[in-house]
Length: 86
Image 1 (tube, rainbow, N blue to C red):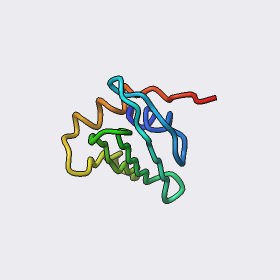
Image 2 (tube, helix red, strand yellow; image 1 turned 90 degrees about the vertical axis):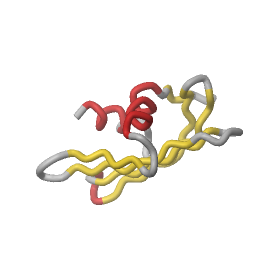
Image 3 (cartoon, helix red, strand yellow; image 1 turned 120 degrees about the horizontal axis):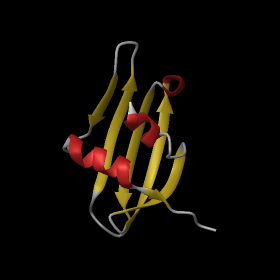
């Protein structure tokens, strides 16, 4: 699935990204040898956030947004840019 490659652009741990001209702090945590992934992104200095779980099973890959539309999560994953600090 394309979303998995977008998710894997984020490093495990913490990073900062630009999304819709705003800076977000993003935490990616992998579980079960990378078969389950949790992402939480918080707009720095703002109120917007993105929260999701992604599961790879033997049958399918499942995107589970946390209390937000799937379209919002997909748009974030397809449009963030990692902020290179340094």
